[in-house]
Length: 428
Image (cartoon, rainbow, N blue to C red; front, side, top):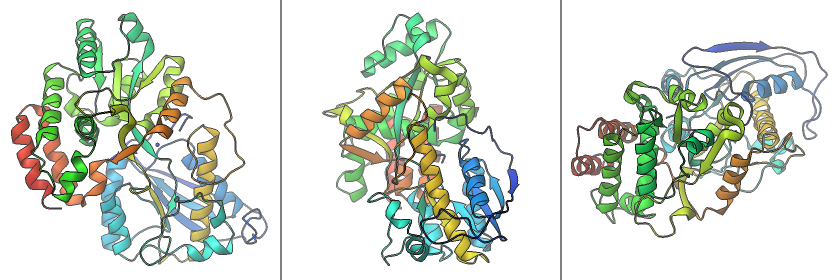
């Protein structure tokens, strides 16, 4: 999925792959917390799917500090998911690689026994103490196999303040208000909501949130078999998707547009709203500036206290940075992954995002008003429902997302959709 997370201009990377080499000449490193560079020599390979602008410079900076030659690839998210699976099967992983989020891919990597435990270098460098409680995930065997490199995320509804003001409307807080905004936008030939239906996951995230707004506990109960996926919260949410499609809430041809295309439509002022993960702030802020608006997802269903919960990604479904246990530069690869994780954390803090480690870094400029409001709201959530795809095996998740996309085509009724979903989810 693409599924996730970023205040500076991100790299404009699509399906092509960028390869970069960084070199340096600095003296030997010690294990004193990482202030001296490593011994000269050595080369590492790095794969990442994240296209955020500071991800690449942070890698270059760490490589320079450690005096390493770094060969890396930044790969389109959808391509990346397949590439990692193929590399695991073929035993052709790079030295260090980022994991796309979700239980299934994490389990794929861990079960393959190709991820190196990082405990030894975390301790020998003294860097383990920098991480906040809960940010380093220990597996059942007591080992830490991955390093964090993205902040936690959640679903948002972002809008263009200027366009909404010109329409004489306020941001929607209820389902009825959301539908009215859609109707008025269409009457003025403005795309109401930009959606990348081609990638499947953006539409899935909207449905996840609509179910949450019907019943906060619906998904967790259905997972446990206490209720069925055909029950009222799931069918009512599906009916709302159908209504959105019938109201022409999304741009013409949205099922053929990628998420990146939909985002650019919003960033460039060609769409009034976008429902997506909070990672969109990275590009939305420099693109729209003070015209960027944000609200919590509206009260669209029957759930009590709806604004105290949201869908998203927390540490139970992390984005991990792994080291290949077969790396010829194993200890250096481990140290690089740890230092890279901390360097990225510094960049997160500088851009005003949540931190997963202690750092002396400070925000380097005033935080955008809408983003500041989001950060405040995020702290106040009592419950974050993990995006469904991240909680099920990949085969189940992909079959479910194929089904979810059909809901947006108008070829299934809400009842037909939930009946098929019940069958798919039982396979987990």
